[in-house]
Image (cartoon, rainbow over all chains, first blue to last red; front, top):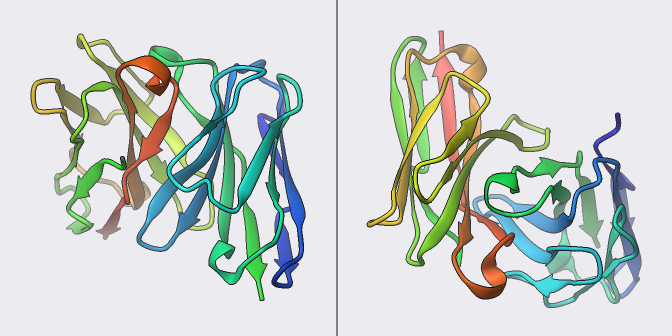
Length: 114
Length: 113
């Protein structure tokens, strides 16, 4: 049982390059999330998808796009990477909301933009 | 709207107690607590719902004051394994906020022998 799988685990990009972070969950969860984690800033929500077919902005969506490809997969795209996007990115999923919002996290993607 | 946690850091000796607080300026539907070890992903500890329902996995307790939109995590008789960064996550009430989980900045807990 893999849970939440993120790829890649590490990535170095040059400023202006684009890339897509992949996330897949095998728990049949409805909701999926993308967070970024920076020192002293906690986990900040970039985008989330409350259910298949819907996506909404979180606290820090600028410079990112997302796609909920199907119920299992939720990708995060950086169209033109900037050094300010250097961070650790976590994907998470949950069954739903309220008591079902227990979030399961992937192992993270450490992204460096030079 | 990130919730605000306090304190930012706590240092304990094994066996001591600690309280971590989390507050929000918005009406909350649920409060979550997670712990993250260095270099690892956050792991769920507990969820508290408006109305008092609670679900948790470990011998760590928490409270949720709905009137003040505040939650506190109580770690008693701390163990070395309690070391890590604790995050509160909040789900606000109303409209499209259900299912939107936002986190505080974290509280670093260090337990020494």
